[in-house]
Image: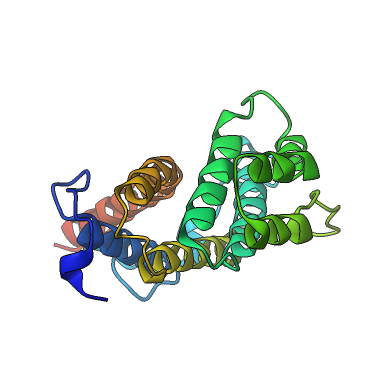
Length: 228
């Protein structure tokens, strides 16, 4: 692709959109590497899965909050994965935008599982097609529309996080690699709105990781001071 043909408005950070979205992909993968203990958080401390696990017992507020989040990440990631099969840039962007709008506008006081059922119902898939998505996109959504099935086990937080952020990276890479995606201002504008919604989800993971890292760093400093 000739970069002279691309539409390059500045991203939220003042970077050209291409660079901005590549950095977002790098952020997704950085979060995964911090959570698997291979990369120090901001060059300070290595965190283990135990450090990042919910505190308290299975019924603690922290554990309940994490379980709800994991369920939402699983369901949203599953649907994002279905959208990766849409070949046309316009169809892909519109379908992704519709998915994120449904995810964001669901009432916050409803049970997480019920909210996911609504988001991934066939009715919502029809809503996407009614907004002009072509046959290839309609088929992808019809084939992959889903209710959240009953799971006889709890999702593992770290495995779900890795899978979710890898799917996010793949979704962004697909947009960058799809012909015409960066050549049309309308597509870029829609994707930047999608990115704003994704950013809110990412911010939660980063905020909690930062809090754990700060606590761990302070503990290590205290140990150094104590030994001195």
